[in-house]
Image (cartoon, rainbow, N blue to C red; front, side, top):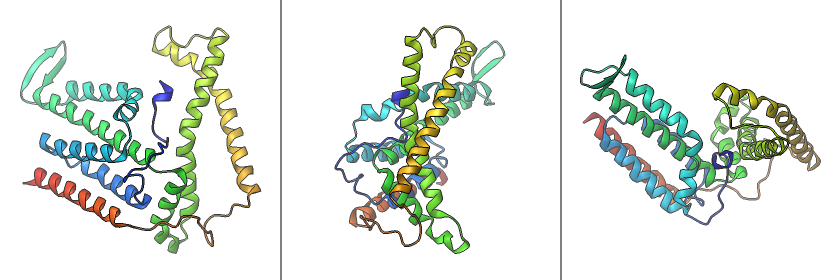
Length: 266
């Protein structure tokens, strides 16, 4: 289950999406997240789905690999779905279970919220799957560069965000190793109710934190040994430049935004 989480992982491939400028992918992802919350009708989600299918097809990432990242979040998605079904007030009642009322408006709201979560997770996963950590750092830093006028530490923030994102799959792999080692010694993480399972995971925290601090210290020592100095006067082997493909991507995103807004307000 832990290995199914795809956020923070990079999937190397030679595709038009991988070759996009990281600034383009960051801006488009940000606009995509915003435009999802403007959708009010089913046809709007059809536009979003078509955009996602086109992006996945161009990225050359297997659909099964992307859907695998939704498995760990299935509980949250279903919980959100049922909460909206049972607790969203409405006029058209479909049926009731004890004190819980299922209305047409609640069913529609629950379906929309579940779709939003799926599209949000898939969209952000595509960003990290198609962008290397170094390119992601450079893209965030250059997008935040105008804030240097007010002494905003754009490079430091970009580096911290990228390292934190990159450490997600590393820590998940470390957690899986610790769980297997303790299960080999007789630990049980699968039996019992939800509270007992949560309590059984407490012994994992101490070795996990120790491993995380050790890895962070090793990374800091390695960067210092290589005389790493970020920010001003830093040179780059690959300079980020916008190309024709980036402008095509902006154009497709603009068409998506226009379709969603027209569908919502007209």
